[in-house]
Length: 299
Length: 313
Image (cartoon, rainbow over all chains, first blue to last red):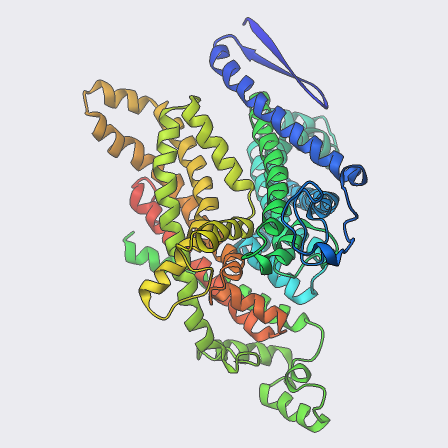
């Protein structure tokens, strides 16, 4: 069949997408449109990553510099986003917070991604008693809504950044396990896995080289939206006063501090939230684009 | 199998789950560092007082006996006593759960009102500008933290426009209804966005099905096709997700209730964490687990009602 290739360039190298001629018109349009949203996502994230690496070049003040002359000043040319009740520059605090929030988003996602995928792989591949045990544990975890379980764990361990990680790790793996397991079950009995078994490859080689590359797509797509969830969850915990403690600049914590002045100083709550939203949007756009690309490629 | 039999069977199936959840909660609370009696009595308590209270609560008995006592107490509606509120936890939960249930049901209503027309409209305008706007709007809503949305809505509609109260609950139902609108709207923006995307995608899939073409070729009116063929089939994933969202909102209410100072179980949980009132946290978590199990049962029943192919097995 006559095939056409369409190349899309991302910042991280080329992705080749081959499509048959039949579906071309339709898919080309939607893929190109999606690719713009993917590009917007990548640009938004790049800006955020730059802010996280070089906050000192963009921020106009130190993140914890107090100035009692400038308490609760509205946005001006001197203080772009205004100041808070200690006279600290909101703009600089928000910029310096980028690093903390992005780091939390990354590590809070990557560990459950690995843990959950591993559980899903083992449960799906070996089946039998291992599957039953792991899936019953999963069922119990699934009963509690994400935030309820995270907050319950924080209640036991106490607040702070280390415990935020532990709580999100303990809860976050469950969706990955479920996703990867169902994918493994779908391909487990296909010919190429059977062929690998016939060739006498050992289990670890089959799992890592044959099963894993074919089941990770949906987990990767989910991870992109999960980063948003984890970042928002961590910010929410800080907002509740159970996460990052002031004066450390973190978006949720800044909003939490600003909440007391909501009647008089709206800028203390509004601006950090916009940054949280923009980073979330960046990940969502990338996730949307990824899901289209991986789906077209995989099936 | 009849509906009653099915409900009965599902309740029987729920028992082991409830038992494991109760064991989990029982042990988790005991993992908390520190002796609950010492916490309750304070540092000035004499060793004798501590020992007496230990015996009274049953903490000197073997752990298995303690668990049986714990379950017996729960079944009798005795969940312990809150130090912070100076009230039995059972009464406290009974009073606060009404606020939370009211909040999440209004939120769900708003979510359906938002997502239904938007999802349908986006689907029939697939990839056109209207669809793009709705889809990206949903993405923005999903990337926005709820506590921030709540505060921004509060700044606009309560602080500057003064249409709604800034927070708190009310004495009378009209007051309460007014107080619930902003928090419910805050929650429904997130869930509404998720439901919109879900409905859009399933309607697009359905529109490509052969049976829709067949229905058109038999000369059925657009209205009948829409109602009997498209909407009914799209409702199945929509309701499943709706049920999941309802459970999710129980978690979300923790934050929204804090933002708007609503006296629900979410706010109760956070305040109990601040006050180290662990038996209250235990009660709230137990109650939420129970609610989620009930919501799941109802979702399954709705599912079976809408899709006769789903056998009640």
